[in-house]
Length: 128
Image 1 (cartoon, rainbow, N blue to C red):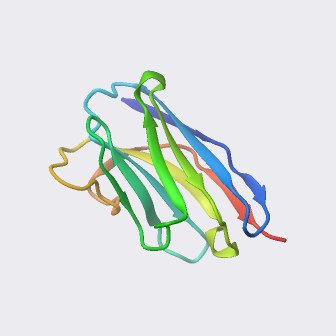
Image 2 (cartoon, rainbow, N blue to C red):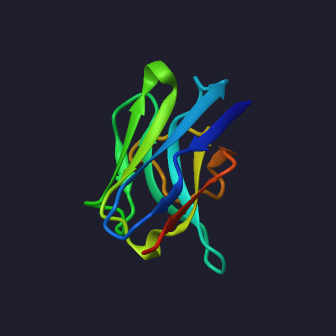
C-alpha cells in the first residue's frame, strides 16, 4: 500500500503563488508516476501535472503550462507543485495520486484505470 498526504493549500489573491507538497510512504518503489489533479463542484476531475518516479519526465495540462511546475525530491519521497500567476479558475481541491502501472513514455493526466492511490486533498482558493 501507498499513503499520500497533501499540504500547502490555502487562500491566495489573483496573481499570487502557492506551493503544494505531497508526501509519500509505504510501498513506493513500484510507483511509476505521481500526478496532481483538481476538482471543483459540478466539474470532472482534471489532471494538472504529473512526473515520473524513477526518471525525470513531466507532463502538463494546457491550463498549467507556463504557470505551474511539478518537481520531485527522492530523498524526501515528496512531490511538489509550484503554482504561479494563479487565477480564480484555479480554485479547486487539489489531490496527489500515485500511478502503480508501468509508464513507457509521458506520464498520464487521466486518472481512471491508472492511478491507484490518492491523498485526502487540499483546498486552494483564489479570490480577491
